[in-house]
Structures are given as C-alpha cells and as structure tokens.
Image (tube, rainbow, N blue to C red; front, side):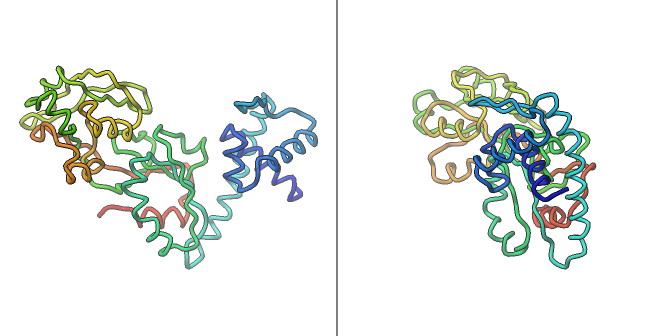
Length: 296
C-alpha cells in the first residue's frame, strides 16, 4: 500500500468516527479542505460513495460502514505494533487519547498539565472534554475519566481522586429572600437548580445523609440544566439552591459568595477514576499517565 493510500484510509476513519470534517481535520492536524480532497480521491479510487454529506452532518453509506468495520482493527493493530516497540524505550513516548468531563479536567488535569509535560516530555495528551459517557473502543480513546458510580462494569479503573462531598449552596441574596432551609424536606418549598445526568437525561433526587442513613429527596425548580457550571452560575446570581461537589464550589464558599445549606446532611460519593478497556493494549504512555494521576 502506498503512503498516500494509507493516509486516505486514515482520513476516512477519522471523519467516520467524529462525523465531522472539521473535528477530523483538527485531530489529524490538516485543513478541512485538504481532508475533503483526500476523501474525494479515495471515493474516486474505490469508485464508491462512502459518506453522505450535508452542510450540517456527515454520515456513512452502507459501503462506508463496511469499510470502517474492516479498517478499525487494521489501524488498531498498527498502533499496537508501534506501542510494543515503544515499551522498550527508556522514556515513555506516544499519544494518549483521553475523554473526561469538564469538572474533572478543571479539578484534576489542568493544575497538573505543566508538571506532566515536564515529567514526560515525549508523551502527547489528546484530551476531549465531554460530559456524556463515551464508548472508548468506538471513539478510539485510550482511557477516560469518570466518577466512580458512573463506570461501566467491563472497565478497568484506578482511583485518581478522593471521595467527593456533595453540598447544597445558595447565595446570600437568595437566603435573605427565601430563608434558610433546616432539613432536606424544607427544600421542597424552595427553588432548586436541578441537573440532568448526562448519560441518561434523568433528573435524579438529591441525596443526603440523615444520622448515618441515606435520604433521597425529590426537589422542584424552574431551571433544569445538564452542566454543573451553569447551575453554579445560576446559584451565584441568586436563582436558587444548587447541589454540587464541595471541591467544585470551595472557592465561592471561602470568598463568601455562596453559603452552604444543610451542612449536617451532606452526602459523600465516589471520587474520579481513570478507566480503560481490558480489550486495549496498555501502552507505556498510558501506564505513565495512570502512575502520575493515581491516588495513594
């Protein structure tokens, strides 16, 4: 196979997996126009249409899906072969493709990226910030970061963060207008800023601990979001009471912009884990990242 043909196949897989010329071009570090030209050349050479293109979307034809199914294991095999050789190097090298929710990138990754770069100068971190749970194999990610209770059963996981305390918070202005709730049941008469779980779109009850026993309370409110940052911003501006992780809102509690509500009823949940599929080869670069982030 000529180098140009391999590049065309790799371009096709990148587009098919991301369903976007723009995102695929960014991943391959080429221009969208160059990528489009590669696809035209591939379809001309194979004499078959591989992609349905519109101004807003990209999808696979039946022929394109069959080609993708055959190319994925081939490209993964080539990557595995290169990783096996890299295992013999004294200094880990290669690319680690990582998916993580925004909160985890802000709390765990961003503060340590410079240190990781200095420790492992030959490793490239390719991080996709995505709050929804992603299929690692389908997305060709090496690993992901998620909170412990959200992990799939077939994943191998290692803890990279302590347990997280979840608290209710509100602004002083909101408390002055509506009063301070004294028990979780009091929240049913308050404006609560609800967050949907990204993986299911469900609006879950708020979890509390009452004298060592779990207590779930169904709350109501006129704002429902799927982003913790938006819930935080709304709470800061006096729109209601939000239930968020203490480590996420700590700066605002310390500055006094937010007050903790019902501190005696706060619950604790599993911390963040770095997880990966048992079906993928553990590269030296991924081993280095896990060792760098591991707790304990």
